[in-house]
Each structure stands twice: as C-alpha cells, then as structure tokens.
Image 1: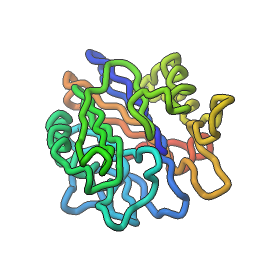
Image 2: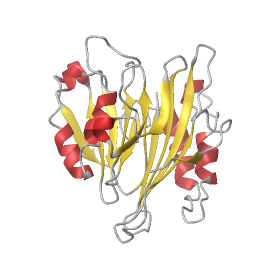
Image 3: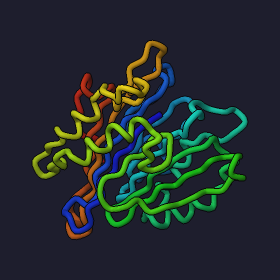
Image 4: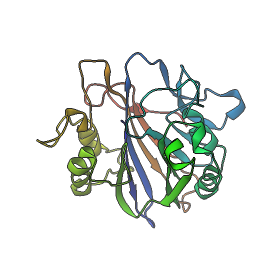
Amino acid sequence: MCTVVILRRPGHEWPLLLAANRDEMAGRPWDPPGRHWPDRDNVVAGIDKLAGGTWMGVNDEGVVAAILNRKDSLGPDDTLRTRGEIVLEALDHADAADAAEALSELDGRSYRSFNLVVADNRDAFWVRSMGEVAGGRIDVAEIPVGISMLTAFDLNDPVSGRVAFHLPRFEAATAPDIAAGDWSSWQALLASTEHGSNTDSRDAMRIVTDFGFGTLSSSLIALPSVDFPDRKPVWQFASGAPGETAFGPVEL
C-alpha cells in the first residue's frame, strides 16, 4: 500500500501540491528520480529496476502521475503487464485531462488492479481499475478542490484506516510554504508511525514491519500556476523512510 495526498487550490501561485510515500518490499531494486528513459527524455521519474516502469514521475510539460496498488494486489503477476508503464503512458501527454482520457481507454484486464493520480496545474484526476473483476473497465473521476488522500482503496475512503486517521491531520495542518521552501508540516505527517488504536500498524503513514515491507521513499511535489511560466515544478525526494532520510531537491 502506498499513499498520495493532493492539495488542489485553484487561483494560488502553487495550485497543486502532492505528497506521497512509497511502500514496497525492501528487496525490490529501484533508482531515485532521474531521466532514465532515452525514448522519453522529457520525463523525470524513479525507476523500478525489476520491471522497468515507475511509481511516480513528472514531465517537462508539468504533468505529474503516480500509481498505487489496490488492496490485495501487491507485487507483479508474470501473466500481466507491469503497472509501472501506465505512469509513463500518462506522462506521454502534455495535459492531465488528455492523459486521463487516454488512460480511460486502457483494458484493465491487462494489469493488476490500480489507482492512479494524474494532475497538472489546472486539473487533477483519479483513475481506477478493478482489473478482471470489473471486466477491464477504467473509471476516471476529477479530484475535488481541497485535500484528498488515496491509498489502496477509493479516493478519501474511510474504509482505509490510514485515510480515516491521517486525512483529518492533513486537513488541519498548515499548508507548505513553497516560496520559503518550508514543507515541515507535511514532512512530519509523512514520517508519522501513528495509527488509530483499532487499526493495523500498516495504517501509519510511515510503515515499519519485521518482514521486509515498508516505506522506502517519499516525495513532495508542487506545480506552479500558469501565471508564472518561468517557474518549474518543485520535487523534494527522500530516498529512504521519511523521518530517517532527509529530503533533497530533484533536478527537473
């Protein structure tokens, strides 16, 4: 299970902020965000060295995409295509709305079930596939203005113990100050190992287990308004568990 938090605030200098923790088995090899694909030299993303795809990336046109497993679908299936290629397909587009429309035409039976966020500085979408059980149908919904959270369940779904416990904390937190480079409020939440008293420890934001599964990296991304065409997106990345590994800038 991974987590993506999205703050949409139209009219702001930084209309979209995104925070994400990547949870995975520690033995699965990966490299931090970079321009890893010669045929997609406009894409900066982490690379899953096992399957060749990515869990999150940004393109030079200002589109960000991130994919999450749905419940009970962790790990690859050798009979299906890797979900990591879906992020790259999203980043082939210069506009989030175009990317979401294109992804809606995928055959979900070709992949294990997934949730995907694709956004730019104007629009943001949640793309859902239930896989074979839904006959391969892909559902697309706009992410509402304000704070939203996506895990292995539906968007803002309180069935997720992580959403039920942590979404109100993000809603109450002071928004990051991008101009000042101050992400401290969100960094603290991403590093939290707290969870509801009646929920699994894996409902914490930062997951720690004794079987090799846990939070392996963390990202903080800000997209600038179209009113500031000279600004680039900001990506702060921790190449280990937040709270234990410092965030540093990704070159975009």
